[in-house]
Length: 564
Image (cartoon, rainbow, N blue to C red; front, side):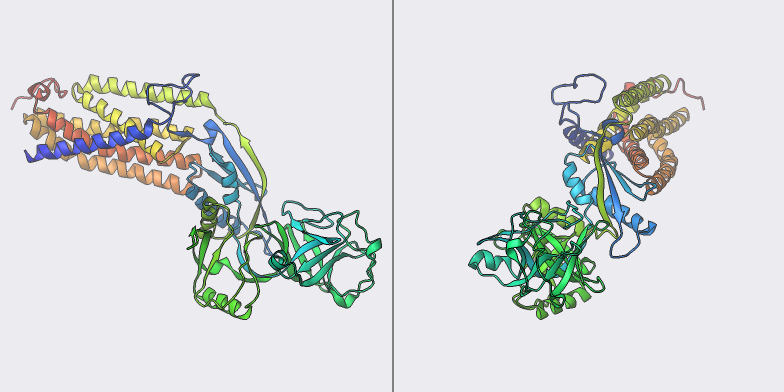
């Protein structure tokens, strides 16, 4: 009686698992290519995404560039590929392919992505977090009015880099605090941006330069600001240069061209902002958490570790009264005013538009900074390389294989073939439900793995049924024969499946893209089939053995009993 309750419990558990699987399967109309129109059987719907080879998707090519004179090496590219894979996994994109081409570009293929823009934004981020002091913000002056000089990182004008200057402006100046100008109308001018009349380069000079002739200044071309002036060399702070390789707009010394500062975009207002060198970087970051502060404002809380805590405390104690820019991938996310020293190494990024954007910032910071700068060289939508015809043929192959297996099992094992067929049906439902539940993308190699495991799913049944037949031939009762048959078959079944899982693990570890998909479907199919054979099939056979007709040797596939 106790064993009967155990077997009933096992079957009840499988019924619950089947119900959950059907829940995930029954979600959207099936469009698997067998028919031109979606199959609509009540609630039956398509729940499995197709891979890039069957459905198409997005292909992104990232070009690596050197960072501050550091060479782009194969080792750094491999690290970058690993970080990108991690980011893709956290985005929940299935079956991605991340490889390196002959030009050392990183090629990413994303099958059936729902939001390619978000994927590009997160994947391509270098996640280089820096803390820099704000030196000032550029504004343009026209008469009594002023306007922010904006900054477009995607623009690369060889004359003025990425600055967007009002062509009618009389002057372009660098002011200390844009917020003071907005709130009180007062301004502290730090420097003025002028054009060197000899070289045509943009020069940053102290505001008390003499010899300016504003009436004759060139206001027709925004790349030439205040050209008709006499520049005192002693008052030159530096010159603005644009590096097309790194896409950086730098302020360098006029003598040795060493970097004095960098012009970055303030993501809150697109303003061109001059910042000093990086004082602290993201490699000292312990954690980043997206959420809301006590006032309901979206923010990403940052915590530093070890040496970073001391460095951050020193920066804040030595620069009270200044703004500290929090820079992520060459964009100023926020620039809080330092009121007091912060000794605990806690900071936060504010001014973020949505909680989704905050979570993306958290994601790229948590997965680590890329060791090289990556720029999106190309982003295209690609069509399926194999198409629906290949999918249709694969599905037909699976159906035909399933039918042939059922026919063989019925013919050779008689009544036991019914349990084998039932187990196969349950195997397919659970397998499909898991793929739908984890939102997997099905590729042609993945389909091959599924078809292969359909054949392998009956291997355990064949071994078990043969052992049961041997025990019945020895004139044992059906219940004892079934128990001994399962007991004698378990070790062989486990050993054979473990060796297959080891092979699948090797394919997953060293393979890429579709090969990993094949390994996943193979290992998943092996585990599911083994559990069904050793638990469900055993329980259902034990319960059915209590029915006299089903306990007959002929029903169990034995033609006759052997005599003692």
